[in-house]
Image 1 (tube, rainbow, N blue to C red):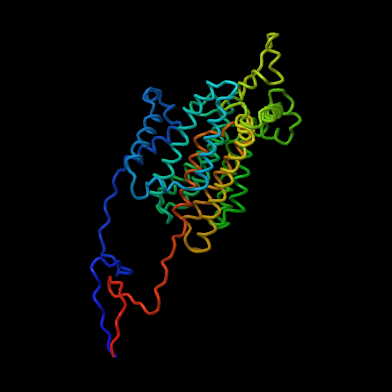
Image 2 (cartoon, rainbow, N blue to C red; image 1 turned 135 degrees about the vertical axis):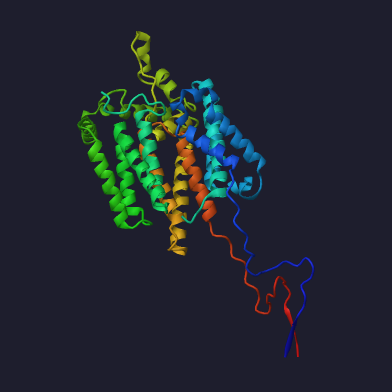
Length: 436
């Protein structure tokens, strides 16, 4: 029996081919879009431009954001196509944005709500799409007295502490990922600097966020050997013990004595503020008092507002809790959407870690990054429980990175097997014809 192969027809689709010819690696080139995104994240999240007064009139965050958005709109090909943005978290974020817009007409201060929605929040949402698509889908490599800070140029001390705790797991990831001894030492130095900044912030909420994050790293960060987790914990413990002052530990001890804390005893403390916020949500359950209107509600419809007519000062303050902030400003549906965004982001990261560990147990890049982002999001969530950070850029940057990581880690569908009667020859797709 002999077999002859029929030549492939012109235009026939190749099912399999030999290994591609080796092509020399192209030299790395600067990507203007990535540069703009990097500048935006450094300015909008890190707020580094506020440290240099000469840069402030140039508005680098605004200019880099506009340039990044425009360049992204012009680069609709490959991994930067708009259709790649489809994800449950994206839809929830869009719904959250629409609901915020619906709260504007009925807001206590419509001007403040409108300017916040069109100015601050829309900018964060747009840059969510740009960061998500550009930074990760295009470039991510999966293989791998004055005892506390006050009057900061960038964040206040408590917000700064939350930013530090959010950044520390990502610093740990860079330490573990770096192959060069120099880069690993640099990353370790940066991680130590973050720990020093956290202590100097004197933030009790930041301290609690750090404790919860450390617990997650110790018990759930399974992509790192236990000995390294314990070593990192020991280093942080030594740093904190070495640089923390007596005033710092005195302030931290008040966490265990809430009855002596002004946050529980004062009418302007967090507990009473949260109670009033829940009252605003009960009074306006559908659309809330309006985006960025919690402070206005405190000065106009709070149980303390009547004092102003007698010349007594009333604090027009923030919610000091991101969940109370959203519930009071956007109502119950807005709060449910906000919680759903966070829960869906955690679920996305858990899927990435689980799938990568099960299918490629020897590859630590994707699951380790997923668990690092989970730790960062946990740190942010704990810190945000004591702060008004529901619309902060750092949150939506984390969400963008988390969703993009799942997008590029998602298993691709395997091609259907060929029938046994078919075979592949070279680049053709025709079966062999047998003749006796």
